[in-house]
Image (tube, rainbow, N blue to C red; front, side):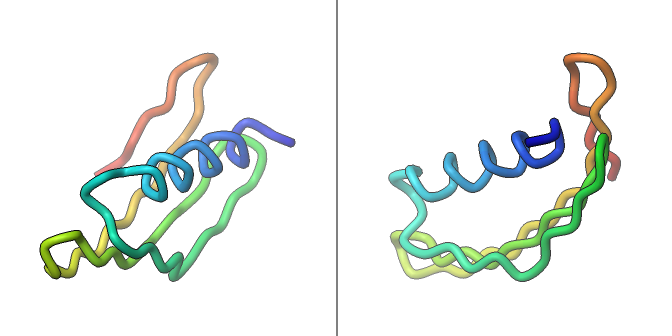
Amino acid sequence: MNEAALYLSAIKTRLALSSCVAQVEVVAEHRIQDRGYFRARLVLMNGDFLEVSEYFVIRGNETATLE
């Protein structure tokens, strides 16, 4: 598994285990060796809806998020 895949797996695990998140729907996920994109729709425990996205680049042992 490459570094981008590991990073995405960690993000999805954190969202799934969060006590604030009731439901996670992954809308888009793209990755290559050292970069990727992730987009998800979340339903929070209080019923609110949240959509998140992230484009990231992994450099060495760091992950840089581009806004």
